[in-house]
Length: 435
Image (tube, rainbow, N blue to C red):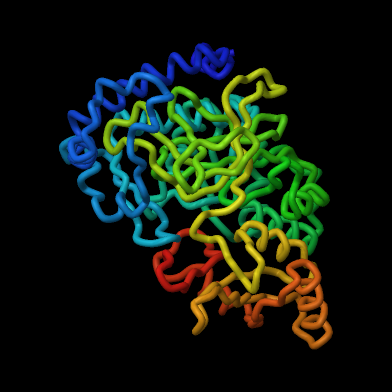
């Protein structure tokens, strides 16, 4: 085992000591170099020297996405001459945020993904086919590429989409693993079925699944995960990350949650009052980045709701694990007395044989309450199909959303607005909500 990876196998006390040392370094660094946090510390009367234990975190204010959007430049801790790479968030829930990285940050990012791919049973013997964009300021694509290079594995940069080209490349270059959005893996399976390709006979033995859940909160496969495994018996590893945290939580072979990289990030799960929730209870993922030079963040609220597990994993790691994202706070839907998070709605729609793809749109009605419009691409559009879809939704949701049937071109326009780099599944047009 590589010596660097021993950190994950430290006992809880060792992990705590490491994180507290790095927390002290982070707070002092921010107080010296961050225009934003210097101002926050001063206005809140915070003495950075008093923040020495993880239990002291509650003394510090949280940072919201809106703070980052409205004061983006004030989070930069280095002269612009030290910035090597400018990345940005996708802007799915509001204005995009720019995250600037120094050379040290790029090296940290590579180490982050090296550790992640190692956790997901990656080795120098692997060849990874990257089915995602490496342009448009997309941090994840760059991170995967640099992490796999550090691992010493082979890389095939093919980009997103085009199942025919993906399969031609798989059959020609024989990658052992793919990095892809799970719903696109289903499209690969569909293409294979239509063109007499047997996925299980291919060289691909595992998939790093990005951007969408493949498991439920209890770690069992959801509909998307089950559909992949039914047709293509490859090992599935889920990963969760965001541009702002510059760190990934990736599953090991046990598939029991994404492992925290304890030397790279401190994680809190907070309730509505910003109090920590107990293990096994849902809370908002709130992170403090460790070792980031350009734009470090302190108690940053991601908007993602997860469940944390601190007991030792079967794999032997003591690092904390996060469940799949249960929902995003801004994507919670209150529809005719039913509270629903977007991932649960996606799971319902993914379970329908009559639907090829979809976009969920939420808007406010004249009463100020939520209305849901589903843009659905059906396999076949007919009255019988419509009855089945409405009956299914009524049975599962106990209420029926509005439905609009679209063709493939219309759905493409909804999922990929101008300059969009990843497929939108959720459009929020509610009053006072992120768009």
